[in-house]
Image (cartoon, rainbow, N blue to C red; front, side):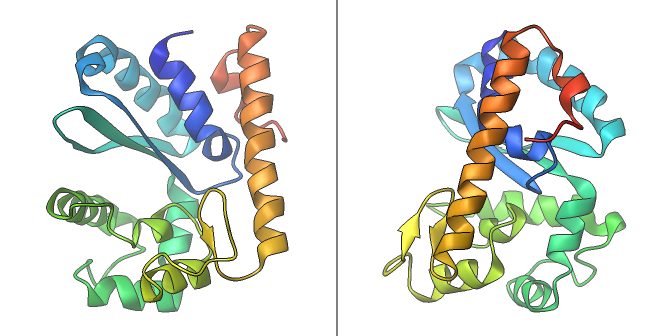
Length: 191
């Protein structure tokens, strides 16, 4: 298993297994040239399954990649109060439509490059509960109930169940791939 494949499995298992709309991860920029062809192969192989791998940005030392399920991402971005907020901060009016997805991701890239930290709306792209994303923005990341894949302000018990599901996805996928099963044959398994 290559470094990139291990990172993909470790960080994007919930998306690969259909339990999450998107995952984000980064790896050292100096490894990019070594894995560029492998990443392109995965992009081609996953696309027919509705899964995309896109580069969001690179900085001096890291490359940031988002893995997403297109239909789930579009559905999440069409939630009325999410869409209204994103449009209010400059995302395209046609946000949530398939033809606007490339423009939407380009705008997210530009926001990531111009902010000193991840723009807070990244939570909407990653499928975090909108109430938690809005609370994070309002409370500036403070006064949360618990933290896992995101900072939880709302239903803590539900969030903990989701966190466990994501961990189960990671464990399942890592065990199966370590046993020699190709990732592509595992995209429909339950975790």
